[in-house]
Image (cartoon, rainbow, N blue to C red):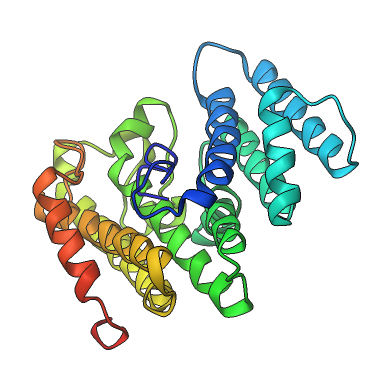
Length: 274
């Protein structure tokens, strides 16, 4: 998991136990390839939806314990069986990818969180299941972390998404700050834009901190991995603040020097510091 969605999924992380790497690789292959169907290339919306429908059918064959899977789904079926993973998170991911094809605006924060619940939270849930830590409170806090990461990614990528004619900032928030979706980058909107983005950053930070105790509670490698994820997300929010919220001028991202800071903070992270 990372603020770059699936791009830096911890497939080869040194913190990932060797016994779990095949499972994480299989989950990543499913998520990455399905996301590409929804978002890459020159396919029509109808072709993209048909491709994701084929993935749903493949999940159905796994659910019915049928044979004859394509290689990627054969590996996924073996992982699901070995680790007793729930199928719902996989269906939820496909639901979010389909939504990305047809929905390019979100009226309110609740609608955005609903999208995050299917586009991001399933990854955290599956990781908890792999580590045998999927109890109710852990899932709630994992959901908060994953949704925060997804929203932070949206804040990073406002300019990128606008180029794709997508806006993941709630329309009600833009209206509250008198910002037109068609003119987000206008120079005369800068003061209103900064105020609106500060609100978004503060809300994303609060959501991340709500889930952060999970990273302190989990022991071993998963705990350190998750603490770095949390601190990486918080560092991105700082980077947005450091450019005075002007994500149109430069996309805030973690540089090499930032990762040393993220690691240092992760090693020192305690519940009392949150």
